[in-house]
Image (cartoon, rainbow, N blue to C red):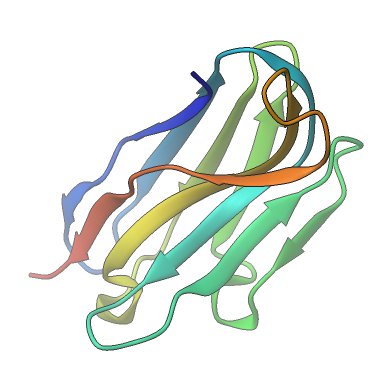
Length: 121
């Protein structure tokens, strides 16, 4: 079974840093874009950052200069380094990947279960 598993969430003070990691596993043929979305209480899920298989990145305006997305194609992982965190960054962060798998051999979007990031003093 194909899955994305996140780790690294938690409680951090404003101005602090956290690093989220996500690992893809299962019968994967290929991985295209990988990235992170977040959903704050009472708000819609929004893009945080994505990275293509060639390493091209795209960020939400609200996190530019503070967050960095990276991936390891060999390990099938994507990380999100979050610096200078603000209370408004508090949300559940979801890993996202577009993949071809043995059970779905066409580009399909997969989601992790999410990890909570809380920024508070």
